[in-house]
Amino acid sequence: MKNTTPKQVVIRVCNDPTCAKKGPESIMRKIKQAFGLENTQKNADYDLEYCGCLGNCDFGPNLSVNDNIIQRANPDTIIGEIAKAAEAIPPTPEEKMANLDKVLDDLI
Ligand code: FES
Image: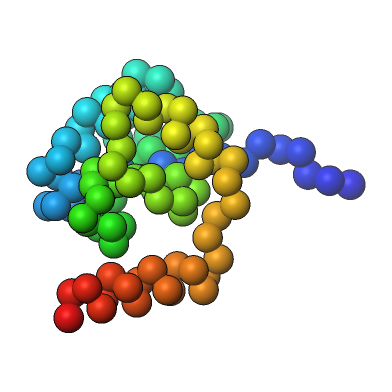
């Protein structure tokens, strides 16, 4: 029997220094309006929280939706982008490691 229970959408909004300069609070405000949640709150459908660096600093403000990164988040389009990212296949552990390697290479 297939499990048809909808999966909770985990949203993490980067608030580390580089993204913080690019307005993550406007993204968070839009998400709060759409889903009725404050930072660190969750309900049956969504889990919302600020987070640390997602490794895409040059393209901020960034957020993660079920481990899929949304870059250059725009408050005018973010709710639609969250819906798309929630339906997308999350990155594999190998893809996450490749991204981490790229971030570390950029730092060195
Ligand atoms: S500071 Fe936001 S991705 Fe690095």
